[in-house]
Image (cartoon, rainbow, N blue to C red; front, side, top):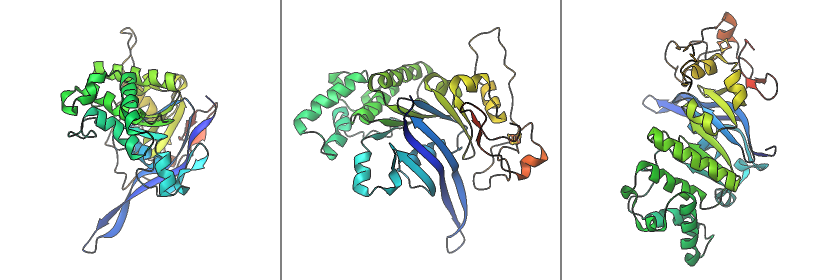
Amino acid sequence: MEKTMVKVEHLKKYFPITGGVFQRVVGHVKAVDDVSFEVKVGETLGLVGESGCGKSTTGRTLLRLIEKTNGNVFFNDRDIYKLNKNEMRKLRTKMQIIFQDPYSSLNPRMTVGEIVGEALLDHELCSKADVKDRVLETLEICGLASYHMKRYPHEFSGGQRQRIGIARSLIFNPEFIVADEPVSALDVSIQAQIINLLTDLQQKRGFSYLFISHDLSVVQHISHRIGVMYLGSLVELAEKEELFKNPLHPYTKALLSAVPVPDPTLKRNRIILKGDIPSPAKPPAGCKFHTRCPYAKERCTNEVPQYKDAGSGHFVACHLV
Ligand code: SF4
């Protein structure tokens, strides 16, 4: 798992805030603010953080579904922001996304066969005669049957709809998939089935995931490495086992303290963070976490901590480390 598939360097995505009679730009929402990481071939990188921390925007910006403000994104060493429209369209077959809400992302007037096969025809990658076979094969891999092809999305349960969403992403046989909160809208019992499906598919086809979730216990099951985001920035990133055994950032420690432990004899001291998450339009100076951090010192209020390797690929941004 050594070769890098996706490399993100100092990625920024700022959304303008307009105001006044002339709708001038009066500020920016810094949704993604200088984020760097890599996803290796065959790896699942989990991205976790509270809602609004910029993880979904990171996923969409690195797929170029929304344009960046600054920074670079490389896919197999190609700078995707230097590709023209046609080249980008071709590359989209290699980089796919699974959305959180399978229902709203599926056209209710199309059958499952049409939904899953539509993109193949659009990209002219397959003759009409072959589309059916390819759709069938992909549906079966995702745990659906041939008779499902003629049915409409409303005839399926939430878990089955997510399987349709996954089949639609897999139809091109992609190399990299951004799974954006793919199980958050599902019941807990169904979540496990979808996570097992995604893990199985990765083993069979060898692709890489960026797995985005607000729930650390979900990310834990599927990820090889985990990155923790707070207010548009990565604050910590490490191998999964290392992160759970040796969390270094106070925010990661607080998130971990809320993850349930299966052993009833073990008790974790829950760390309750005070205050609300600040607005990304007005992030606090210095360390963005200082307004909620139980260990904040004066230095934290005016000096931005460097995001650096604390050893063996365990990255963290905190003055204490
Ligand atoms: Fe807390 Fe300071 Fe570390 Fe930020 S830099 S996480 S405020 S100790």
